[in-house]
Length: 427
Image (cartoon, helix red, strand yellow):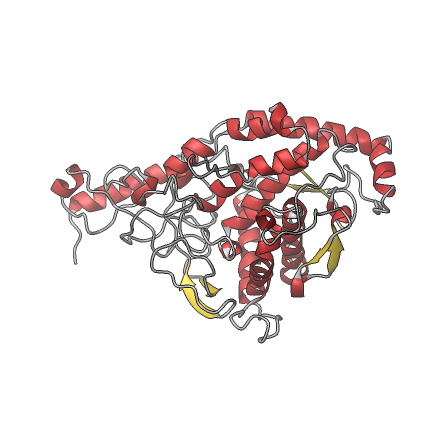
């Protein structure tokens, strides 16, 4: 079918529009990071941090701030660096699984091995005492697999939530280019999707309440082919399979566990149920919930400086039965508003997961290093999600493991990024 000139002209204009992106300000959180790096450097140089860590036999080794690897913000990487990262992720997706079939029947790749670990431990690693440390080690374990098995030389980059807050669709993270982490999904009609357990503040289709009009944005659906259609502002809800970016066509092999997306069934846990990755990127969600003011509030507001319990509760806050709230952790999983990002068991199948949780770790790193000695061994919460079933309080002596991706570790060894198994800092 020959497309009308109006459609081709608009498509060309949209492609040009997609290349224009101005990052929103992130000065407040970046300034906090610079301050924390200075404090960490001083505490490491004078030995006070190492001395405190040694009280619980945490090894500090030869890592220093000066020789540590630096995790950088994704949009600041060169195109070649972005390709190096995504190629390493693709490599893990192509390597065969090592998890025994009776443990994870649906695992087909090394990437699936890592996702299976998150699925298996979800009910003890969210809204629990191990939330921050577990996810720090999980991202690091993923990073080690990229390096040791796929020859990656860099570090896992982080996603500055603030920078993409005003224009996620054209941002380097989600513009659909080969240097991104994927674009929007193909057309798929759907209703409002639930992002909060309370059911409040559901995310509307078609850019989360802002219809994706044929002539106003960077993707034009071929069902709108006349100028009359364009001028009627016909909305184009997305939400289907991602067909752009470096992971176009990849499959989530492990069955959904608690799907938030309509029409996605949950089958026997960890069984094989391949399906495409779906996106319906919500610009309004980003604008309201991910600006730098939210990060700065988390790091500066006295309410969240008392102890790690107050800090991590705010990071994960989703409101209550009558008031909805997209805390920064929840926002990051629902910005793409699809599947498996919205399934909190299977969410690592969404490639943006790693950049999102590297940013969550960066925010914790900033918070910790505002007072690196005092905050080193802080843990708050029980050993189960929302204390269901009831469990004892978590301690720094608690252990967990990464399944077939790594050995058993102790929380106290994971509290500093320049001690224990780690040697990295954030820019």
